[in-house]
Length: 311
Image 1 (cartoon, rainbow, N blue to C red):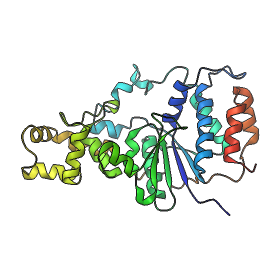
Image 2 (cartoon, helix red, strand yellow):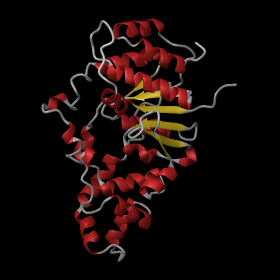
Image 3 (cartoon, helix red, strand yellow):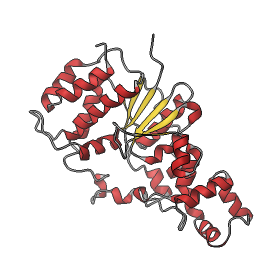
Image 4 (spheres, rainbow, N blue to C red):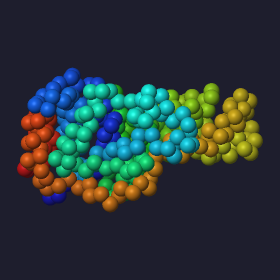
C-alpha cells in the first residue's frame, strides 16, 4: 500500500544556521572545509524524514533574503542583519559561507529539490507551496521562525514544526490549539494580523508603539481582524479610545505598509516543481564523492537511509 501523501517544507537557512551554531566545529575530509553546518543540516533531514514520513519534500531557499519590495514598504526591514558592506548582503559567519554550496550539493545528490525564486525569501516559497498543496495533503513546515505561524490551518492539516526551542528532535508542533494557548489568537491569519500590530525587532518591524503582544491579540479578538481594528478606529468606535486610539492613528502609514511585509507571498512561481521523493537515490556517485571529500559518510548515509529505506 502506498503511503499517505504528506508534504514537508524545510526553511533551509533557519535549519543550517541552527546546525552551524549547534554542532561543534569539524573538518571531516580532504576538502579542508568546515562541515559542521552541512553535517548538522543533513542529519536534520534524516531525523525529520524518519519522523514525519513525507512523500513530498522541498528545501526552500532564500534567493533574496531581503527583497527590495519589502524594503520599499518598510525601510528598516532586516537592516540590522546586513553586513557592514551592504553589497555583501546578509551578515553570515565566515565559516558558514563556504558550507552553504556544499549543502546545496548534498540536497541534489539526495534527490531533495531546492526551491527558491528571484526576489523572494524562503518564507514566500514556503507560503506558496503550502497554499498550493492545501487540501491535497497535510503540510508540515519546519522552521525556527515564528513568522510562519501565519500558515497554520487545522482544516487543511497545515502546521508548523517549530525548532527554536527543542530543535528537530523535540520541536513544538504548532497548530491552532497552540496559537490559542500561546498567543490568544484563533488562526494563522489572526496571528499575522497580531504580528503586524506587535511588530518584530528581529526583522526591523517597529509595530504600533505601546501595543504589545497581549494588547494586539485582544484587539484582533475584539474586532475580528486587523482590518476590523482599523475600521473601528476610522469610524470612531468608542471601544478604542484615549492613548490606544492615538497610537493607532499615529501608526496609519506603518499599518498601511506592514501587512505586505509581514504576510508571506502565496503566488511565487514555483508550483511546477515536482516535490515527490524519488523511488531511488538519484546520484549515488555524487553522494559518495561528497561523503569522501567532506567527511560526510555518516550524515549522508543516514539521510539516504531515511529517504530510500528500500534502497
